[in-house]
Length: 590
Image 1 (tube, one colour):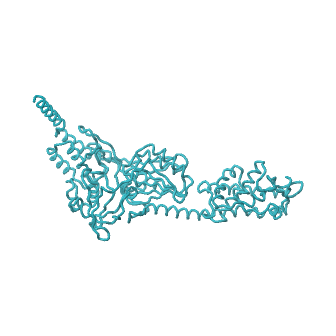
Image 2 (tube, helix red, strand yellow):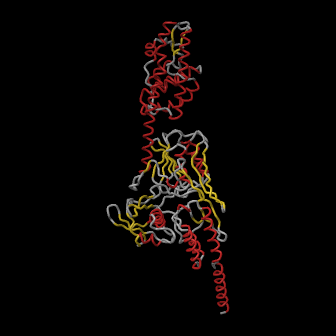
Image 3 (cartoon, rainbow, N blue to C red):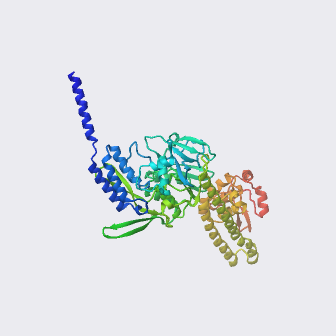
């Protein structure tokens, strides 16, 4: 009996200790309330833009302190206070089971007073077989959705304000961690269904990013890792592997947690050749008893590593958040990409961390506004190439991005085709006049030598033009620029210096292998490189002037007994026919 009594006493003692540990100090909460309100007034850069009475906030939450009984209620107290400002960038650095999540895998907007499912997190949802885009949200957990908005635990903002109402509606869809999320939806065909949001399966991505090539276009997808410095190294590896693609699509539609500018600048720096501005910062400096003064500055990104110069498309959506949004407007500001998608997460401004005097956790406030270089607030930015989602079984945003790159490539190819055809005219015009000069002045005349000087000067100009094209676009095949322009590439390289010829020979080999250039182009270039290196040629395409015989003769060629077999494989006539047609001497014993 004594043992039982002792155990009971011990349990009672432990219970007393536990209840003492969780006892709430209302005075400390009151001090922390005063501190957070003062910080909002002094540091929250959007306070004047919000339709919120700060005196109402102070009065209402001061009166609520006496009702707080638990640590969890304390967390919710400050969470609800920040929710008054309907700004997803204002948040506590902690949460509890009854806290609201930050976002849902669907997004609703107000359309003609109705709340409609405007977006589904398509890149991350695995098992959504029914198209709910365009559906009206009638109820949430059996409660009329409008009533659920009215019951949302904020008291000093105007829930009839459209921006406030839409923000609250999406916070309701995010739901509390410990409560279900059952939606009653009226689909576009007027069918009413029950939709369990918690049964939507979200993909778990492996790695900081994923990359692949689709129809010659590189696709790099950031896996919500813009806050991990190692992303820059991984991005470099992926981009280096995709340097020869026809374009890059950078998918930022899975970056809801944001990140920091190190990752953003690290990524953008690979797409510029000179220092460029990518965003503006602005905040108000306050001085007690003195006028507020705005401070504004522009942030730049500096080129780094090998520059990717083909077309770039950045994909964004409702789950592109904070630094993802900054990266999108930054790419457009530096002029390196077109942006495709819908509105982004609209996380306003640059956040700073603050601490409570008594609570162990802190909170975030937006202390500076961020702008596109053109002056548009980051959270107000709408993609240049807007895509309104209409279905879930088709990635309309990705398809739009691919379409734009293809159109840009076609437009670019057309311009390059014309440029290459002009280069051919420049390359051939003087050479066509050469026989006339030779006949009139002779091979050893000053006029003939000067004419060759002009040809070589033009060759250098043409070669430099072509090098720029090749370095930017690769060896352009027949399917892209046509036979004449494709032949011009070979012809100009044929008339370039040895170093240039050796540099681009591998590109020509690859083009011939893919059926995009003629085999005989390769034969002529390989032979000329061998001849310049004082080695025997392979195909017998090159001839040199013999001062004794006073004629051009075929330069020494390897294995003459099998040369015609090699020539035939690359589409050339026999060496005998080639020599006869051009008036070249063919000495079989050389």
